Length: 92
Image 1: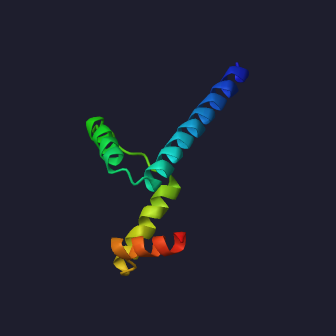
Image 2: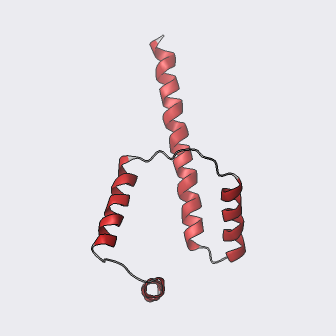
């Protein structure tokens, strides 16, 4: 009875890894695209499939949100135009 349970745990871990990989690939592609129509289409898809589902955050995500809040409170902010300028300089 213990063997099938281990196999089930392996499948769940594999599925989560696959799901995480898909998410990360999508995030990477979204971050680099300059195709506004594509981004609007993705936004429409997300809006049309949005539910009242609660998000489940892992400890790393919670930590990142807390760090963001601290940055905001401490005034560690950058405008979008300054960020784009710095990004452009870094890319050149």
